[in-house]
Length: 95
Length: 326
Image (cartoon, rainbow over all chains, first blue to last red; front, side, top):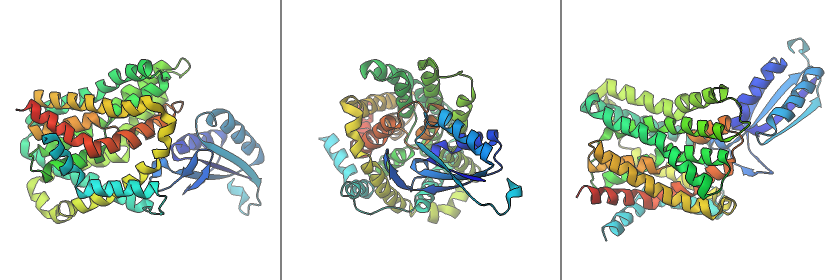
């Protein structure tokens, strides 16, 4: 199984969620985060100006589709990074 | 001389001094920072408090008195982007989508600027129609929709105009938490009337000034963090961020007088026309016109126009109103 992690501006959350539905992800976890990057420092006290981290567990093929579409459709529009990692999932029937 | 006095009275209010303190905290890289729940809690408090008060005032005044100035406010909000767009596009030589995004921000309004203005008028004993909060509620969305349409038209490959982007902008503009709370509290206040006001007065009226001062401290920090971006936006937007509010403010005051408002109410309509949104509009624009550069619209509304209005703008719009009402 793959864990895809997306860190992006809070405004992009809805677009990411729509994309997740389209590639068949069964769910996701997201939380507000702070940090620094190409766009300078992002503080978190105003939700709209903050960053979110979105984590999704997927079958490898779905993870591949998701990352390709994120790169093509969302990277040009939002401040965003995305990466995947291998994970061992205990309740794999859920995905 | 009157203008100087008016400015002085504003600059020495707790709210404005705390705002300046916040800017200093950001510039000196102090670790002062409000936790997110406190920020959200204070916005909810301020919006509900002014919404409720405005609703009670609508119940007192009756809809017959309120609808004409409300209509004037809506028209003003929708028209401001139409004339600021060409200024940005051709005067500032900005790309169409950026011009549209900034125009949407300047047509929409800043609730905090409005609240600071009501606070200022109260402090110097200038009466105003408390139902002016209704203008704040109706002026937030029209400009955002006009701005999104302008932006889509400006982009050759911006996708279909009637598409999902307009719907998302509309949803964000109407059901975003600030407008939702404000309109909701207006309705609750209008239903409760004076009797309801008596029950909540100790909570929503007495501590209001203190909460506003604290909130402006935080807004000072938030605006101060953007000062570094001023270098990125260029001289044109710096001038735009000060001169356009002055022109819009004057326009708002004139329209307020025409719609039959008192001096204080016309000043508030001026303040609303002059103010630029930095929470609702960016949220809607970022989603509907993601091609527009957020540094441009956020910096001009939050780091230029907002501090200008809070410190100098508000007393200037009052003086314009005083001149017209002589």
